[in-house]
Amino acid sequence: MRKKFILEESELPKRWYNIKADLAKSPDPLLNPSTKEPLKPVEMEGLFAKELVNQEFSNERWIDIPEEVLEMYKIYRPTPLVRAYGLERALDTPARIYFKNESVSPVGSHKLNTAIPQAYYNKVEGIKRLTTETGAGQWGSAMSIACRHFGLELDVFMVRQSYDAKPYRRVLMNSYGASVHASPSEKTEFGRSLLNSKPEERGSLGIAISEAVEAAVSHDSARYTLGSVLDHVLIHQSIIGLEAEMQMEMAGVMPDKVIACFGGGSNFAGIAFPFIRHNIKAIAAEPAACPKLTRGEFRYDYGDTAGLTPLIPMFTLGHDFSPEQIHAAGLRYHGGGRLPSHMKREGLIDSAAVDQDEAFAAGLIFARSEGILPAPESTHAIAVVLREALKAKEAGKSEVLLFNLSGHGLLDLAAYEDFLPKI
Image (cartoon, one colour):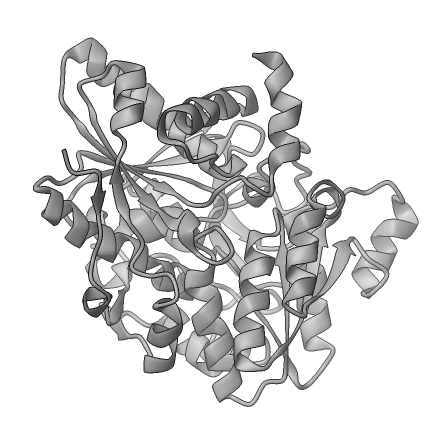
């Protein structure tokens, strides 16, 4: 029985996939927050590198990956596709379960797939400093590596709850040369105002984004980078699904359902969008504490707490929503990206909410059957895989389930320590 399906380095995809080219109906545009008119590309160029803005507005199906990006991808890509025989036996299910293992990257998650091109395009444009936010620390770690490789300085605003709870993520970012600030911080006007009014504020991704945006626009030589939500980020992540598509062909099957955790949409889009064009069902697994797709409202909203970003058509809980202090910090975001929100509204994707205890229980089942401790974010996808596998068992169906293991949990052991006494 073949366990792993591994592509040759020469088979690494040379182009990213843009699902906008295959949508029957175009998503609503981003809006200028001041005029409420459709945003023009030039209006984003003070915040993002020009080529990233071009990709944000592109409707081309395929976008060439620069050679310099491909070379850095080769450090860890292509990543393995794995048949989860151990998990199948543990569940006693006829379902065939596969996972794309993005935990093998240098930072232990999928985030490097977009950090590398974002740093590269800023370097080409002559930018010297980047700013960004991070929840669990995985995105900040990815940008730290990418910025070090391309000779850029980096300021990371890390959600204060995670800054305190995940100190080794901070150490990792510092090791690559990044400056890391607990958010809300004293570094920005918005951060100072929050701390003055609410000194005990533990932060959120929305707050950290506001600080990173403010820090970027305050310096001519700085630009902002984002780890999820926007179209260009999701385009870069398509390399996950493009590889998985070839690997599923190697396995001789195609998935009936593709499943991934959902915060802003980057890893979900990465694994799912290349399969959705083949009319394969995709399920976004989100935390019950932050259920924007399952319980949110579709409308225009800001991507950050302070209202500094463009207005995004999204499923949202409100940009001032204060999520619970769950361990899956990377999923503690109030809204979904424009593309997955549009596709949810059009009935092209499904969603499921998972509470924290169910997620961690699923993560332990996976760890004890497959040997990999998943990131708290990834456990939400695994929980939905378990639901679907048990449904297949009840129905006597041999469904093929594919999920994205977006990262490992080796720097999230405190979260597992909190959960273990409950079992």
